[in-house]
Length: 154
Image (cartoon, rainbow, N blue to C red; front, side):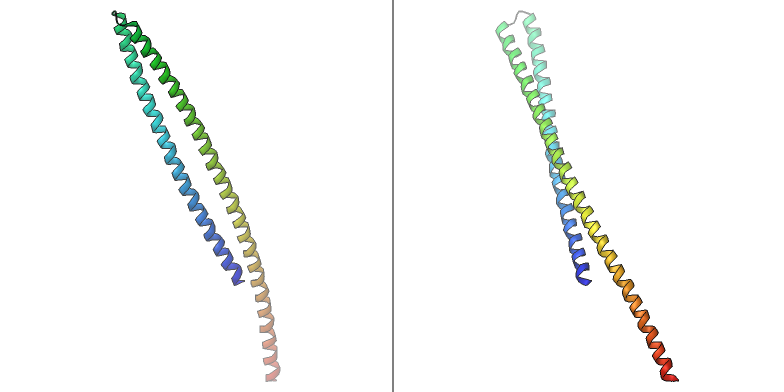
């Protein structure tokens, strides 16, 4: 019975450590996701700057600027837009992958916790049954003790 309690306590500690590990992993993945989001924001800012440059170049081209320079700027903007689209796709894939990893870790931890709780409840029922049995035996011994005392006194 004592051995079972120790095992139950050890299992509870094991699951607490597992939960702490999962929380740590979750924090790490969240930080990486925030960093990726910050990168996307930076790329969007850069795209906005490049679009402004193109607008200025168009305005300049409208005033007789170099057509070759305008075409180069258009190509650069197209290139940057393609890079932004690629980075957005990478971010979406990373986000999806990390979310899947987190979901899998959470499901695993939940199932392990449920198993540990079920084992704990089973052990509790066994201990309760043993306690009830011990109480009945003690009551029977007390009755026998009283009967012996009565017999000795008469």
